[in-house]
Length: 209
Length: 88
Image (cartoon, rainbow over all chains, first blue to last red; front, side, top):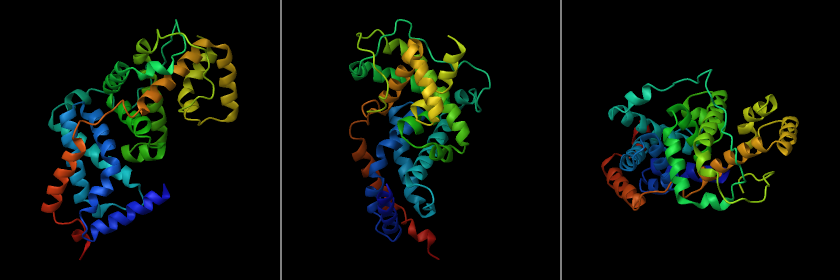
């Protein structure tokens, strides 16, 4: 990671010194991150692709403002999210989002759903294409503040501090929102996750393998 | 559902992120051994996360990368290079 950071710093120096073509190489690892983040914000493929292109151009334009104290990926994702927000406003979909929560509700049902006829979900079930479709729909249906945190943490794999920095919120808010987002998704997806083939019950110590 | 279950749910995220103390983790695991409901909740939440992290869940449109770099290529040629801003 440290080596990557060093490598990126060198690329940035070269670009700023006039080797502008190097910018292609600099952003290549983040192409997907930009698109996916914008897709979850804009919920439209064409719009997300165009926004990702614009965001990368903005990043090129303001590369001289990048300070090495943040990670380049965090800086870039912030630019992408700003582009996404501008578009939401322009598309007037902001009207829809502004009705949503902007702070966490102190009250609310963020408890998980029971799987009453539960049997362990075999990993093969996760191979189903429609399940991935359902997950994308469920993510899209989350209120914005929860969706943003979930996308950065669980989809983009950013840590709590980076997520807090990118969204301009506290680490405590990241934790609360992430927990609620996960519980809401669990609840929405349970109907599609259950009813699978019975399998041997074993779940301890099996985290992201 | 009982109070103990509720306490487990409140810690599910932290448990999955391995951000809890050994003491709380032991307490949760002890509960899970005897509570099929909570075990199922934990397992399904974990599966949601596995699915989310799966590269195939979000795929890029065909030709996305090429279009992106083509557009960047044009933009880079038109925009004065960013280093010029910082030179005085």
